[in-house]
Structures are given as C-alpha cells and as structure tokens.
Length: 342
Image (cartoon, rainbow, N blue to C red; front, side, top):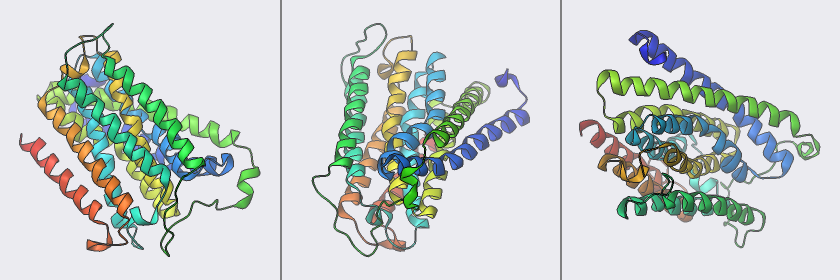
C-alpha cells in the first residue's frame, strides 16, 4: 500500500517515519544513560549494547525486508552503508565537541575492544564473498560464525569494561564515566527499561515504513539498489545514532557517545546474518555486486582509522579535531561521490 502512494505522500510518509525514529532515539539516549547508572553497567557498555542495538533496529528491519523481497544488494548496502555513515557521525560530533578531540576525551578500554571486534566482524563477510559459494538451508556458514563472533565480542567487551588490564593516561580533558546523581544506583531500573522498550518498538515500526519507501524509490525511479541502500535508507535509519551521539556529547556522556556508535556498528553486522537468513535464493554474500563490496571496504577502512585515533588520543588537530576525524570525513566524501557518479 505504501509503495503505491503518490510521490508527495510517499515523501511525507518517509519524513514522518524518519522523524518518529529520531524522536524516539532522543528519548532513548537519556534513558540509556539512566539505565547505565542504575545497573552500574557503564556508559561505554550501555552505549555499545543497549543504545547501539536499539537505535540500529530500524536499519535491521530495512535489510530484512529487502532480503525477503529478493534484493540482496539493497539489504547488504543498507547494512554496510549504515556502518560507514555512523562512523562519519563521530567525526561530526568531534567538530561539535570544542573542548578537545572527542577520541582523546572519551578514552575507554571497552571502546577499543569493540572497535577491534568490529573490524573482525567486517572481515568475515569479505572472506565469504571471496570464498566458495556454499550455503546450508540457504544460510552461508560465515553468517553462523559472524553471529557467534558477535556474542563472544560482547562478552569480551564486558570483561574488559569490568576488569581492564590497562587504563588510559588521564589528562585535563579526559572525561570519566561518573553518574550525574550518586543516588541513581539505588533506584529501580524497571520504569526506564519499560519506557526504553516502548521507544524501541516505535523505531522498529519506523524502519519497516522506511524499507517500503526505499523499495518504492528503486522500482519507481530505477535507482540502483546500492545507491538507495548506502546513501538513502542507511543514512536515514542511522540518524538515530547521529542524534543520540550529539545528545550524549551535549550531556557530557562522551563514553556513551563513542560507545553508541561503535557498538551500534558492531550490532549492524548482524544485519547481514538476518539478511542471509531471510534471503531465500542462496547465499546473500554471492548475490551482491562490487558497489556493495566497496561500501564494506569503506566501513572497514573508517573503523581502522577510528581505532587509530582512539589509541593515539591526539589532543587536538585541524579545526580542533583529531587526524582520524579529518580522515574519516575525507574517506566518506570520496566514497559517496563515487557511488553517486557510478
């Protein structure tokens, strides 16, 4: 029904769905911070697991719907394009946080290990694409490995967060993860958790609407699936991560901001698992094109640059941001230009 709407109504529905997802993400950011304080989980872990997973829900709905419709390129490019877009958002947040380089101020071991795990997870689909075209019950073995690696990565991140074997050098600009209210730890987490779950449901519904509109763009205007997936639906469904990152930075929850992006990207690799399960024409990885592979490489490259910035912790560089933010802005701009003119 949505795909048959006249263009003005189609665009209006698209905008409303995006607005609903963004509004829900704003409310969810504060709740995630409260949940982190009341459970003693910590901002980096809450950002990576709770907030990152919740704000990624709209994107996974888009990819699964595309895979069910048999459009492997749309499903794949939406997933990996979202990872590149969300990494870009950290560079933009770095521009907004004027006190120092964001990656310097938000030093946290859990974010480092999550970035390493993200690079590992992004490497697995690359191996699947280059390897033999095999599948069992329509599922490629790499999808199983990717899911298990994600679970292990979450466990490892939790261990690093709870019992770090090293700590970052503290400087005058380092922001520590401390509750705003010392009494938060003694309060119930049930209420915030239920409200958070309701907001997650809204994000999921918004993702379904966005997937329908994206499919309409491909069919009605003859746009490439990789273009719609990587630069339209991926960016729109990633806007919650952008909003939550900016809100977290404004609140001073820097570990939550960085952890939300990296953790959200790590969760986004599961889009590929869900899409492979939903794609019934064989292995998803062998049904995609070179444009989709290009965005996978872009996401891997930007993650490597981000990890280098988190380790180097440059206090400030050009425009008071770190070298990693400058590089990520440049890489994404080149990738988007190539996609549009290609």
